[in-house]
Amino acid sequence: MTVEAVPLDSSQKRATLVLFEPVTGAAGSAAALPDGPRQGDMGDAQISRLKQQLVDAKERFLAAIEAQQTSREESQNTTEEALSANEELQSLNEELETAKEELQSTNEELITVNDEMQAKNALLAQARDFAMAIVETVRQPLLVLDNDLRIKMANRAFYRTFQSSSMEAEGQIVYSLSRGSWDLPGLRESLDGLLRGGRSFPDFEVEQDFPGVGRRSLVLGGCHINHHEMILLAVDDITDHKLAQQALRRSEEHLRQSQKMDAVGRLAGGIAHDFNNLLTAIIGYSDLLHDSVAGNEWAIEQVLEIKTAGERAASLTQQLLAFSRRQILQPKVLDLNAIVADFTKMLSRLVGERIEVSVNCAPGLWQVRADPAEIGRAIMNLWLNARDAMPQGGTLTVETANLTLAGTDVSVEDLSPGRYVTMAVHDTGVGIDAEMQAHIFEPFFTTKEAGKGTGLGLATVLGIVEQSGGVIRCESEPGRGTSFKIFLPAVGEALDKGASPAGSLGKAPRGSEVVLLVEDEDAVRKLARIILEASGYVVLDARNGREGLALCETHHGPIDLLVTDVMMPELGGRELAEGAIKLRPGLKVMFMSGHTEDTVLKEGVQKGTAFLQKPFTPARLAQKVRETLDSADKSAGQP
Image (cartoon, rainbow, N blue to C red; front, side, top):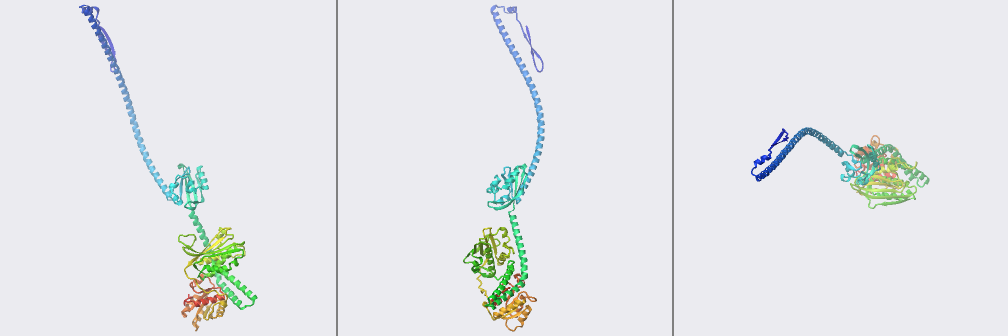
């Protein structure tokens, strides 16, 4: 018998497989098979086969044992690997738990940070909305540019001021905005300085024309906001401010002019009464003397010199009163064409042969209400001014026209809508610069050399025109001549058919009525009595108001007309007239005075009352007395 031990390995314990195999000898074999060779051969074959089967079984058994052992080893390895993997999983799980805790902590921190960020974003949004509200609310135009000088945004004030929109502006280079109107040299230099590292640039002023807006005066300022990479450009439109300043300067100038005229007017008014009384006597007596020395040429020449000097003095007084708006006007409805035609007859002789005269009067010219004598004085002053502006000759053009101004027409400043009659005087002379034009209507301002101008000509014209309810405008450029245009309100009334002024007392209208003459100035009273008596009137005279009122009461005959000075001691002309009319109803009254209009009006003499301004000529006194006596209204001339 053969014994074989095979060790078996196990993860649990060690084991051994023992195999017992019997060994059959020759004797044994022979004894076992006595039947002869045949049966022995068969037994051997069977034994061999069994042995082979036993060997195969052993091999299979061993192979199974080995496979089992290998499987057990593999299972053991797998178990060990599983245990190891489990340990790793446990470790990973612990790490995951730790990471989970850390992630949860981080998540909580992120939530906190997110809440803080949301709160900060909300505050930023509020701050942005507040800033945008300020930007949109301010009236100053603002532009925001990027570093490429493209417009990122602008506020409403900008779009409103420059009549633009966000669609037109945003994304555009600032210099191309408004058809290139923002391409300003000063702005380019300033923005280039910001892009080179400057923080801001000082404000500077520019004037520019913008499409649809016109010419604007702007003050530009800007700064570079580095952390936002943008440029803030502030635009201050000072156009209205500058216009207001100009208007203020004009108002101040008008105020100074008014104060100056008022001062001179007060001076003129203060001396007018006494001066005009003296001139009345000088001019009146020279007229009477002229008539009495007929045929004596030498005497006539001397008398005329006296009268001319008196008239020049009277004219100067009237000019002083005219530009200060203190002279008393005698307005009538008149045809301006007729006034121009009367003066045109002497115009060529007045301006000289070197100057060509052109007169263009519009047909069908509307009537105006003005004092013919004062309008004539204004026309004469304008023509003389034009003559002096053309020492080398030129063309003087006089034009009249009708003009209707609508409510929307602002072509002429200070004129209300309505109908106007215009008279323009153009010359081709040296012209007037803008600085001179600001002063030409000032009293005593003249561009003429010493001794050739009083400086009252244009000031007188301005006073006459404004006192007649009109305005005068001047347009001129050096070397291109000057144009003065007068605008007078048109009236729809019929022309006044007043009597033509008489040239001398002998040609003046006469009468035989009784006239009560009251004048406190002896020279004037004596002169007026001589004139009236020479004209056929019966004259009663008195030195003051009380004597005049006493004559009204004591005189037994009729009194047809009271001729009285306005201002007299004790009892003035208005009080005398009121008392005389109570005593003699239907009495007509004519006032005369050397005072200014404002003084006469303060004395209670109403406009429209029969009035004669001193100084007067004998013919003018006789004519005015006749007009007052012949007036249809019984109360005409009453205060």
